[in-house]
Image (cartoon, rainbow, N blue to C red):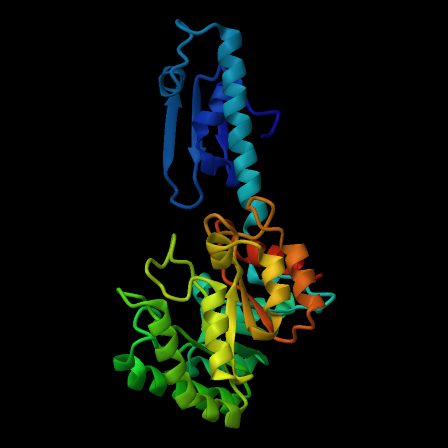
Length: 351
């Protein structure tokens, strides 16, 4: 705020005004009237000294002047800090910078987490950051990817609750997987996703047998087209109640029985942490069965920074040491500015 403003009337303009004139009024204690000009809606809100005191329950008849000024200063400082933080985090697409420098981990990002952007905008962001792929798209999205020189690292197929663990679902699921394999082969993309589905009272062994039977019907086609079918590990404790593939042993057993390099596991680190933990040991032990990774902070599936319990730099180094050549896709829901959150995640995983 300019120092030559009178104490009878202070005019606020710009981003600081977004947090309300009453905060800055309180900062000066002795103001008689404050005019607040909001550039977005051109409305004026006037607060008298009595109204300010009433707003914060800081009437000078009840609160000593020193206490009033101290508390008011804290309010104003919080407002200013909030305004600066908001301004600092609001990155535009034009401001995106390249993050990838090492490239030992091929990183991707899940489309559904960034729905606020059009696919074209997300492609621009991803390309500028230095990524080469986007996860979980459908064939009608592929022309846009091609325009940006990107690929789809995992193609969507059938739903996750009605999956291949039931024979009555096989025809529908396999038809969807076949179409995705065709699209992947046409564009040169590596993976398609599949799910066993929910238990709904079914024993795990029966689900294993049915899933293996389904995959054996399609795996020869996947081998021919050089496309990998990835079964996703999800948690049944928090997000996907009753989901069958909720422990690594189940998925590994399915892969072993199918017996093909074209059937692997999508190891979602967030889900695995909830169900079993022991992430790095699991990666080392079952590296030959993992074809794709997803990230996410736990708890809450937010950013993968220090605010959650997983230490992703160590996890990424463990993945790199296995010789993994596939993709690690970020699948967390940003709690802050999405561009900043994605940039930070890519930086963390660029080991």
